[in-house]
Image (cartoon, rainbow, N blue to C red; front, side, top):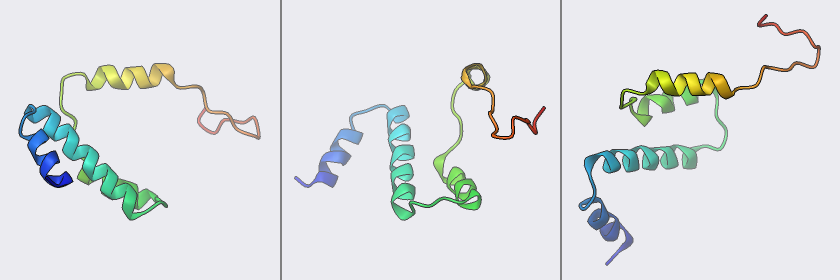
Length: 82
């Protein structure tokens, strides 16, 4: 049995939510393989291929990100975002 056949066999035995997550990860790996150098435009293009948010916890996740980020630090000691 080839690796692809083993993968297809595994995919046939898991819930759709895990298949979706696997597809997103595979797309990420393909994107990563294409280019080691990313630009803003390439990142935006890649985001279109990754998929959409699923679930009801988007606001909670965004809050967690905001709560765990450190303030920006600048060499000039002047924060242009203040």
